[in-house]
Image (cartoon, rainbow, N blue to C red; front, side, top):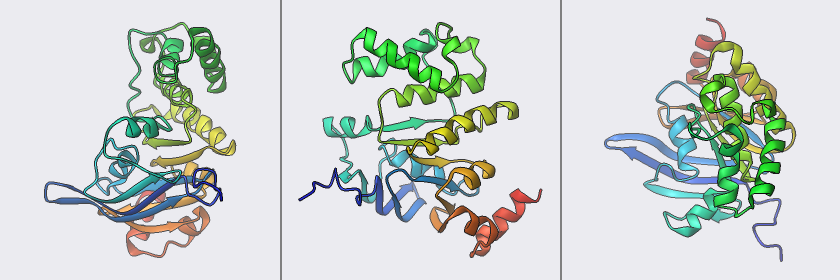
Length: 253
């Protein structure tokens, strides 16, 4: 018998009947979502539709009121060591870069592998340099975050997440704080990751990226998943009025 962790049929992310309230606001309504291994799912929708909350529940940055969330066949516990373990398998990149200002770029990337994965300094440094090379900022390794552009800092934040060898990467609007000319340098790193087979869930307004890199587009409105389809199907033939309205506003403005 294959254990669920080794079975290719077990989705990397599984959300079943997930509900979440902020006071009287029902921000996630009976969410059912599966992300297969190596899939890229792009979540889009109007502001306040619950996209970021959905992203943040997957590694328990937000608790849920009911339902279950599993990563690679393991249900997320509410707290404790088991949660910390599962969470270290889930990389997360936010709108803000959250880099440690007093540490150099390479130190930022080395930190978690040394603390959590108990790598020695030499090993962590070599691995960090490889990752900085991969995201195109190895030449900035000894600088501090404030000396880098926003696009460079976000690429470092991606390298820092990858340093933990995560099974899945969550991106919560990773380009929305960036100047337009920096957006593409971050998206190209994400496109490369997708091509390499990283399982990714990406909340974004970048429709070109959704078309190019996603296996499926999940459209949310008012806390619910309204459509879940392949990019060509979703962009060219949306089925719901809500999605047609949304696409009409963003694709033809």
